[in-house]
Amino acid sequence: MEEYYQRQLDCLCGQVRPLSEEAKEASVCHWDGIAKPLNGLGRFETILTQIAGIQRTENLSLDRKAVVVFCADNGVVEEGVSQTDSSVTAIVTENFARGIASVNRMASTVGAEVLPVDIGVAGELHEPGIRNMKVDFGTKNFCREMAMTREQALEAIHNGIALAGELKDAGYDILAVGEMGIGNTTTSSAIASVLLDVDPEAVTGKGAGLSDEGLTRKIDAIRRGIALHHPAADDPIGVLASLGGFDIAGMTGLMLGGAISRIPVVLDGIISEVAGLLAMAICPQTVSYLIPSHLGKEPACAQIYERLHLEPVIHGNLALGEGTGAVMLFPLLDMAWEVYKENSTFEDIHVKAYEKL
Image 1: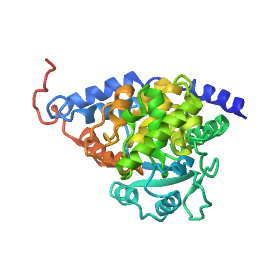
Image 2: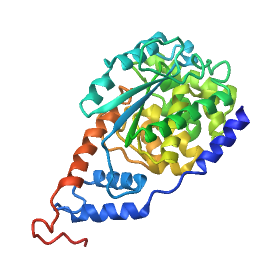
Image 3: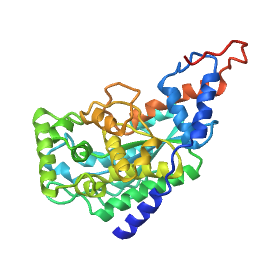
């Protein structure tokens, strides 16, 4: 199955096309005709123009929104790299389905749906509303063995690709990506260390409230995992299989699927940013379909955005996860979109338009 999955992935990535320059140019002209200073909404004009290019139309839409939350457990938790144990992953995953987690509260204010996905939670989940795409009951401890097989990594990626296509067909206009998985700042920092070619200490933070001693254990675990597996940065599937998590793999797939199906995907914090790095390594054009939301407090965040050539617009020292930072971008985009759709033009108010000097 590994070879089959790889061939399918290569074939699907071959379908990714550049953004529509015609739609982007039309969007820029539309912005410039609105009765306001040129580039008055700054980055938000740029982002909406990007979305026009993705959707291949000047008349872009942000009506239907969803945040897809990939949930999975990580075997490296055995190394004492987190403040809580893996049981919390299942509890919070079911809370997403019940509508009582932080991301649910935030998404409800902007009309976005929360779609929890069990892609690798350690236990059986029975709460209605959780999408079952489970690859395995959590990963292995990468300090002792590979986190997952290459086949499992590819399967999880394909699950994310398929879900993106399904959501596009269902009429969603824009997706945010989130995650839940105790220990996933460890897996993401490990991958970042390899892909950015930096020492683990430079990209590893305290996650959900580790002590100084816990941070030392976390960095040590990452160093031991890298030393055991020797993952190569030019083999992103190998890096993911050696050190990653099913949540990261699913998010990587959703981003690739967004590029394949032409639907924008909003990044959240460090874990989704690492998935973005993997997606770029697999299919470089995917980055054009990604929208950065916020600069998280983990030390790798700025370095990853620099590598992706993306610039987050929210600087709020956020570290909640679940896709909350990505959802926070939605109302800002909605406000800019309202101006884009409804504002008077210079022609409407009989005022000479600003000139580009």
